[in-house]
Picture 1 (cartoon, helix red, strand yellow):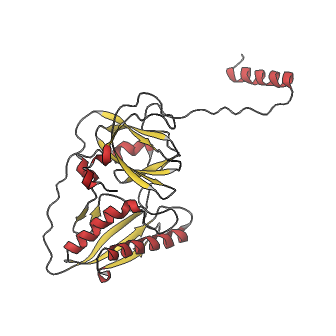
Picture 2 (tube, helix red, strand yellow):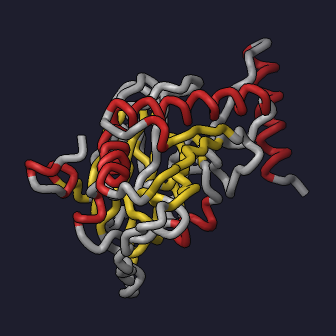
Picture 3 (spheres, rainbow, N blue to C red):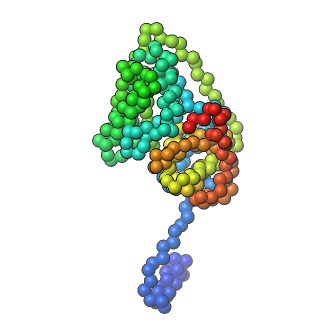
Length: 289
């Protein structure tokens, strides 16, 4: 019995015999998903089968405002600190959240000592990662001091990849090491339920620049997209998401995007299929960047 493969092979041999020696033809199979968790990412940092569990919509545009919240153990932030690739320099897109940390330290003198702890993702260059995490944590200390925080209140330490968590270990933590005897009361934080509702949609991520971009959704790095490339995450709860881009050029920006339905496969550079809010979903005088 003649199979499809053998038929194609026979056709190939007969064509070469008739036309002489030919260079082999490479057929590229388009593996982009028309439905499922992700589509058209060049690299994923989070398991695509678990993306929907990682990412939940924001209740309001207020969730996009940089926040630094004091807990018993740390100053928790609702965003990541972004650095230029391979160096300790802080990207301007992270200045607003660091400004909030500095302001929180200034208004809370009962926090006597804070440790700025740098971490990096796992890779074979462990020693390089350790040095990089040290540089980055020191850069954060220098920035906070430039904003009025007394240097004797803050220290820095780099752990490299020794304490990496999950699929992406690049992070900076603000750990409270010592409280004063006159500790101020910390207001209880209200946790809003963002998981209500059964409807789902697709989040379109459109890289509009000529550089590869690292993409973070609600502060969680999900992966990379190529230049002028559209990508999508499917099966997310309907709502508002904070999508941040950090380009290899050093340029960073964010968009507030609402999920919608992407009916057709994503094509690089295609028309957006989700609603992008003006000014990142924020009032004009509260733009983060």
